[in-house]
Length: 262
Image (cartoon, rainbow, N blue to C red; front, side):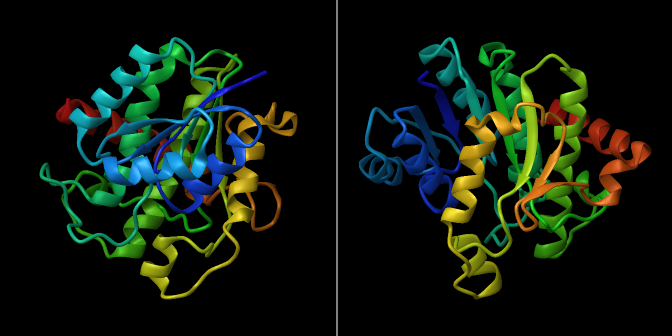
């Protein structure tokens, strides 16, 4: 059956390659990016019946508009892949005072997912890009009261998306499925090149596991779990994600922050 799949951050890197990989199977791909020009380039590369949606995920108005546009065009979204993410950025703090890594990697996908839930069916899937780099969240940094260096902010933001994956799966035990995936460490994306100065490993490694998490029956019972593609198996996330008190504090922080941004 043809699936409708939205992939954020799909104008380059793992997102674009995942779109190309899935489109070859005949699925409907909804591409997201910040630049209209780059989105048109991505359509050419993906082919098929790909559609484009432009939004800056550091801006709450853009996130709301993106969700509204998707809901207007579609009454069913089978898969949402929250792929967009940042590590090193020119401006590390948003206009509202939050770290850009928390905003794009944690808050934005949560807000977008909540806004799209009305059209994601119970048998749908939400695939969240986590990372092997996860670290306990400094709550002052989460709330914009303290600045972190690039890697600390990135690792904490990836714990954030892993935490809310687990909590959302508990909230919806009957579906949709919500799973966190580390697509593989140091893959050959622009983020890795800019952040670590290395060419990186084959991006197809990441695209293949995201395709599997989105469509393969082997992930059917995976809601709330974390898949580590470095080891090729489901694994425990960072211990801080399993700390119920820390998880509750992070979730309350995410909800409070999104209220201030609404």
